Image 1 (cartoon, rainbow, N blue to C red):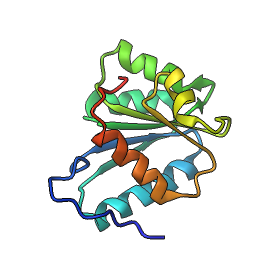
Image 2: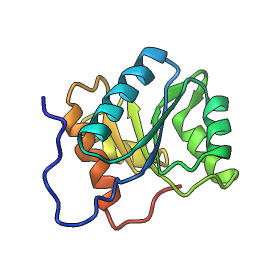
Image 3: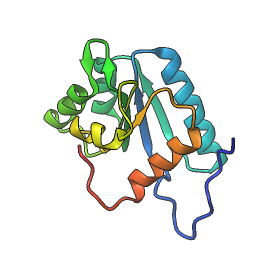
Image 4: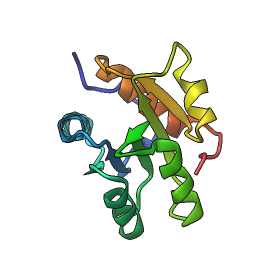
Length: 148
């Protein structure tokens, strides 16, 4: 599996992006964090990758740190990713792109995630990390405004 991006002739839209990964399962946030940091280093992107294992931890990070991309599980300690996105909007902690991940999404994970207020979605388990990176890149190359 390669973590390198295809060469671009312009400045990479991911350069310096702040990323927050939220999941109540610490091994999940650790794995995502490691892969995104490795991806960032290999492609010289300077991503600032942070993790949170609860909604409150996520909100505390969002109150003090500029985050451009939120990657959240659908179910987090009795709250949903949709509720987290709603709190972010309510507290005006955005704008940011949002990617929701769930084991219950069907074949059209983007459509289902948008119904919950996210910009895009992915189904668990995620075995295709290059696909994840392409999904993230697509969010930042997309001209549509973010959901939050």
